[in-house]
Amino acid sequence: MERVIVYVDDAAYAQQVLAPLFSRTAAAHTQWVLVACAPRMTHRISKWVSHSARENWRAKWADKLFAQMLPVLRAPAGSVTTVVAKGPLAELTEQLQAGQPSAAQVVDARRPKSEVADEAAARAGRRWTAQLPGTLGSLLTGFGALWVLAFE
Image 1 (cartoon, rainbow, N blue to C red):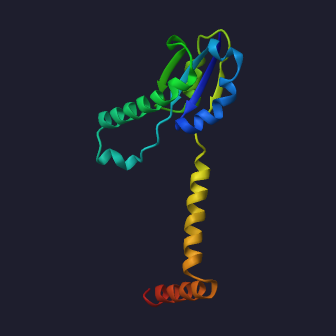
Image 2 (image 1 turned 180 degrees about the vertical axis):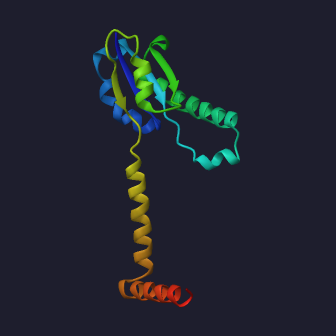
Image 3 (image 1 turned 90 degrees about the vertical axis):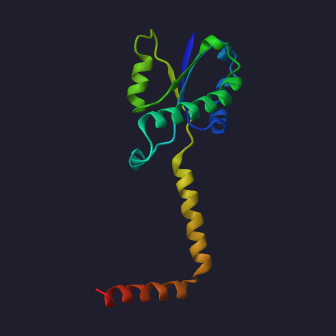
């Protein structure tokens, strides 16, 4: 039986990435290990939320993700294992592959974060260029620099 470890943070994106794997004839005889990679929380959140509350939120988030992913796999319930990532993925991968006779295929089906950051930066850039034409923007930047120098 083939083992496939899949890292997931967005069900819709993961389904697109995993579509070729689902279409294989051996997909029914595959042991799936779904690893939920919850969004990172800032270190400052510990001021407001307890550790147990963060763990409960992470578990609820993972349950929703698994509920969206499990029907798509169309695999027997015994061939799907669900795991919630709580540390570095390299260490988790080693733990999941330890004690297995053959190495499992690892698929990273997480949504790339750079696309989101690039889109946000592009929207912010368009907003400023639309509001401040070239000459006016340069003029305001110059006045801002003079203002800072005048009050130092």
